[in-house]
Image 1 (cartoon, rainbow, N blue to C red):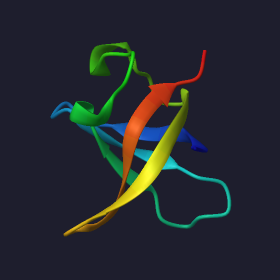
Image 2: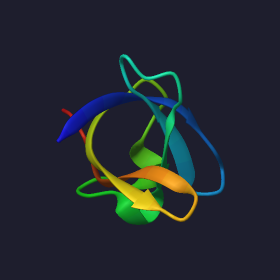
Image 3: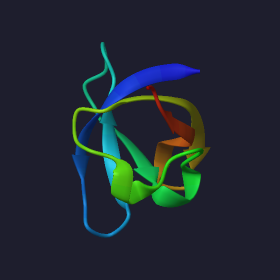
Image 4: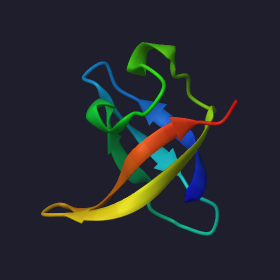
Length: 67
């Protein structure tokens, strides 16, 4: 599992995670959330996740908010 912080959220059900030491933010979709709904997330929240490859590049899967 990796950790990161929500950099930005959209009103379309997805967002981007900032990871320390990485220049590019990582995409995540609300379908990949575990134990939290998209409406409960706020920019700056800490998350744990795994990275998976997709046709458009790496993205976050199994995304959970750190309490």
